[in-house]
View 1 (cartoon, helix red, strand yellow):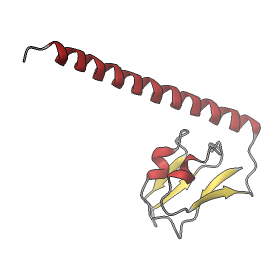
View 2: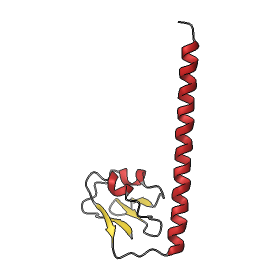
View 3: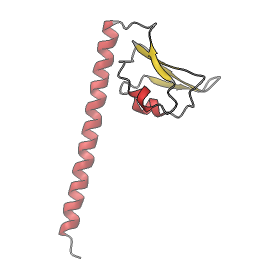
Amino acid sequence: MAYRIDLERCINCGLCRRACPTETIRYFTTGRRTHVIDPAGCISCDLCAQACPVDCIAPDPDYVHDPAELAAAKAKARAWARRRYQAEQAQRAAAQALVRRLARAPV
């Protein structure tokens, strides 16, 4: 089951788009500016719904995933999580190196 956005309640804050590990939430500026979830890429992780401050994202019971699409979306999510983890580790290592260097600096 994929998720969908209630366009009447959406305030277009973009928090859902930033939370989505598969990057399947798009922002369209043609006509009414809206966020839309591509159901083929949605892995039903619920992160977008948790990030939404106005609770306008809910499961779409009408959409049934194709197994191949779901497998591809999950692989994309794992790659996203891996990149995010590596970036966090790099930031942590840089911060620790800076702290060590500052600790050795003469006062």
